[in-house]
Image (cartoon, rainbow over all chains, first blue to last red; front, side, top):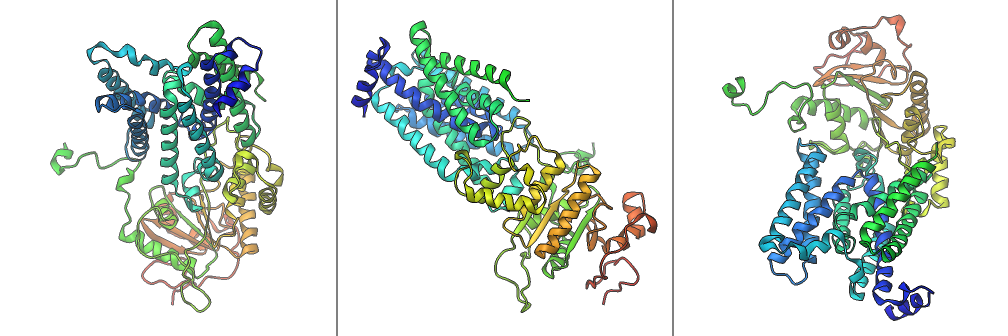
Length: 277
Length: 281
């Protein structure tokens, strides 16, 4: 696959298209942006924008724990911790008097500081800064393959279980009365978000990952007349921001993740102006 | 200081009950059994009413299976044996909060509930057809492509009623369905419910604190205050002095719609039955 892709891209009449790192980054961007945008649509429907932000930040603690445990690939620890935190917040939301945004803010503060404290022992935090701002230009073909697999997985889930996942957010009792496992759906969705955020985080950067999750869907919401338009517009806007962000960051020599997020913000602002009614 | 004295962890008297103090008491169980009785024998359209905190929601949650309780909800078959299948419930929720920016349309809502084909790829012809049919039942086809966030609460509740009718349920559960709906919308809603009832031979359980709105269409009204206070035909219940005791206001016979249908013989001992003419056997 990869040789085919590089031949294809290097055929483009641009300087950047000749570099292997840019060919890889381009493919990675075209995989990760639709993935995040697809998820973002339901994240906003479920009013979980803040929760996904917290999950993104918690990946830092997962990373720290992975490093402490001496894992060579801390990704498993990152995913596990993010999923655990997601479920914890769902439970807290359901069973405690603490309002859910307070609960999430508390968790976010704890996990971020714990992660920074653990990782900065001995003054070595700089080495991990790539997790904060993302580093898509160093992605390897094997890592691209894992992104592709994740996108395929999410697409499969979206084909089979989108309707129940979509329906539960409307009204829990209504969903339960139609025989849907509300708790199971909520928990599974949170775990999916946690896994995707954890896998994408090193490439996008945890400071901006929520922007790429939320902004395309939020912009699409301003323009769409139904759920199909909403989803397809969000994916298109996400991919457009990814492409434009990658290229402008190349020419402007800026951090790619943040540049993509800026483009997405630009599209959101535009959608506010074009908004119907 | 009574917290210390009685060894309580928090003040015992709050305006809103803490959900973990909600439990199913003996009286709830009794009321529940009684309502089950009514539903099992297909006693038509029952309105369950009572003050805030009288246990309406607790009963409703027991019926939808949210709260543990004894006694399963099943219909009696013609041979007088209980059917083995659990009851198919159509549920119309209280006012659902719809985010103002939500792009979800009425069609999206139906397609997500009725079909497996993912809504984000656009509902298919079969789902469209079933949606159109269901909406036609309540006279809401023009709303099919409108967003849920754009239509009025009255229209939204009729849409949820249409959704509750596919597939046709055995018991239709209405949970304060017209809260926030204007007068005309309320009348239209209950007229539609009444029409659906005759069309599909439904048992209906309406939970509402609005005493008179459904009185014209309901067969039976149950006044709840942790246990069943009063049970009978709506007109008789509304004229009962217990109404004044419970709500602080009463009705005169002229204010109320005329009684519809024959009296319901209703067998239950030891409870005050409304209407002197309706002696329990």
